[in-house]
Image 1: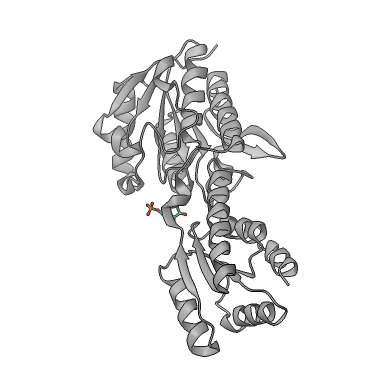
Image 2: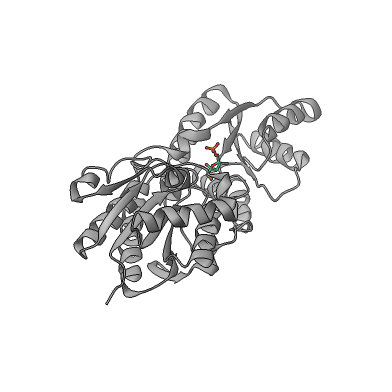
Length: 325
Ligand code: F6P
């Protein structure tokens, strides 16, 4: 028998398409099992402010198709402090919330796990970030939609690039993660992808563009993963112009990639993750993450999902380069 009578749910970090599907799944699975469920607004910041309300079945009606998160989210840096987590644990106890589901990325998971380790609160993490860079899971909610959004944008840019015989440098999100850039590079037939782990090699980019032109291509697309420092795409444009006489245009896709209706894949996986998170907390699990492994949603120990994957799929660079000759 479960000792848990109520569950809280919050989103933390950057929003990602599919978070609403996960919230809906958590709320309805919990209610179906006879639990009370509380929505915590604005992530850990909202928890510390006591911004908490009881949710019912209809609170999550008609949200499955919407991007963003009805609970809103925040990046709560103070949650790295033990005193602040202690305060959060008190608030949860005072509000009689027995377990917490956190939908977010790597930073949020670290705070969540610390909350559990220090105060014994049962927690479940649901991976939600477009970057798909959480260790221990092959997938995080929002990635597929973000990739598709970026592909749609690059396809449109390609129209102009071919009409005007131009080179475009398109920067995609992902911070230290190369996942979006590599997928978009493969799927748009990009001439080159600049990864966050690479040392910038302008010679090689210029060689790829020139080779394309000499074999009759009338456009080139270079996908750049944003990395940690702003300005990389503009630096590439300047160096291509100054050192190789290649004119190019920069297009930074930015937050467009975080919005929009979640894809079928995101809705499906998010729904499964929300459902299994609640099911396993009720079973008595204390610290789990809903991971996607070998095509299935499973739960794994929280400790397996605390790192950032930074070397994800770099071998795909060869695929991009081979197919774009
Ligand atoms: O982690 C998701 C992400 O979209 C990254 O790809 C990006 O670097 C970052 O968040 C942007 O964060 P913010 O919206 O807080 O500027």
